Image 1: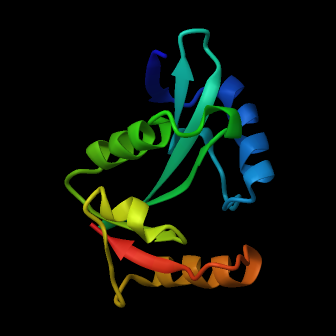
Image 2 (image 1 turned 90 degrees about the vertical axis):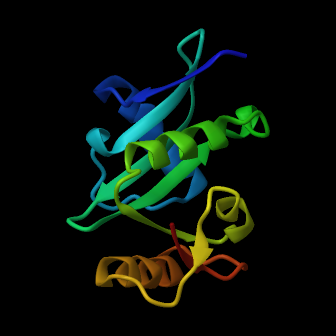
Length: 138
């Protein structure tokens, strides 16, 4: 399957928002400019990822692959694209799957900027799951 990772258009943003709702991901202050999407050669949206940009760092977040396209390297392509775009900044992610992000050079940290601490608080109180949340940096 051919996969291209491209900026999110306003048209595709509607699909992204539906995916965010279905996957119960961070849906705060969304804008299409923050997102990249993975598409196949038929122009189907396969997945998406978001970068929140701050002065000294960026946060990778709201990364999802639609269930019928999982386990095909799409999440990896999205994550690599987000990392490459932000290569010059420190990156943070709040996640329940630390092993996945270790593959990309992230490690668990106990010190992070206030916005990332706020994200952890939001996840713990608004997106509760059975797994623990971790803050990771790269």
